[in-house]
Image (cartoon, rainbow, N blue to C red; front, side, top):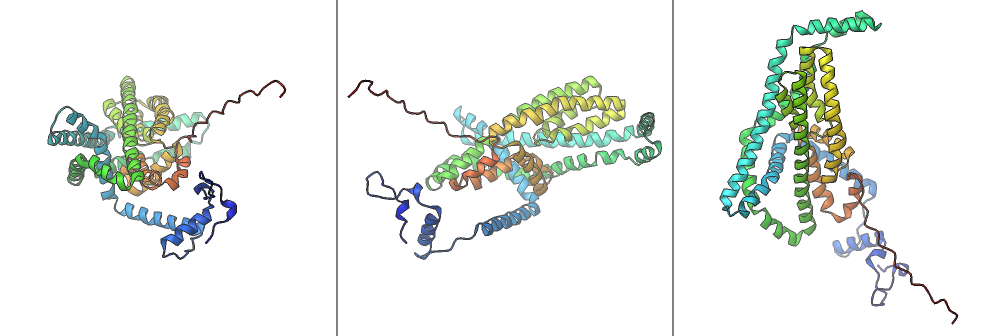
Length: 401
């Protein structure tokens, strides 16, 4: 096969060698196919066929992950937690600690994080299920008050009374309880999770050596994984910082409003802050429900207003901006990742939505230079290369020749 002379431009040496940028895509693709298979040209698949194959592969992989969610979710959680505590190992070794002591310190830190998550979720579930029966007698009074209020507003009392009579307070919190129990169920598989954490933490001691070896053969993949690790740490740091702010403000507000178990719901706000976009809604249900049962509709409305002012503004508008800038994911992609990974991995997938998306991006996009265009649709805002300054034009001679 000969190249089209129209596509050839003089190279730096003036020999007419075609530049790589001027070779048409079809010509380059045919050259690649010819060189790949015994010098014989291979017909490329149509774009529609490629899209269908990629879609089918994604569906198959997703179905496999959904069936193996009990294994995939704890493994990814162990990876994320190990990345979070790795700087602690570096600090210890930098201060002269032996390698085994630095590994032990990192292991204690990661086990402490898991214990805090388990205790926090378990405390929220236990306190919620134990407190609600104490307010069972208040349901009839609240139903009567709601019926009277709606009747004063001109709403027909009969359908309203029927609907409120059939209302079961237990059903209002069933979705939340199932969600928290789902995360607790994965975290409570302590034997498997702690075992995975042990081996991942121990193996992380040699990750730098392995990265150096991998960089010699796969530099793009090595740089993509390094970027993934950095993004995970920034995401955890930013989310924990905003989660701490939200937890303190929520606890103080609930305490001032007299809502029972304000400290527990503040801790729940911190945990649900790691759930993108809708975490504040999950953390709002228990205190709002208890405020309704304990202080009536006015107390519930006050809790909802406080959470909307604090949590909605911070978690929905301010935090996603900083998280998107830190990890390179847009708000829409973050929300879609929440839906996808919750469906595939269950309740724990909501906590791992951003880390899983970052991992997929690192392996499939950042590691492949040809897929760099996809970053334009994933990032919070496209980044353009800096414009080169125009060369200064020297003024010509003003006199006649």
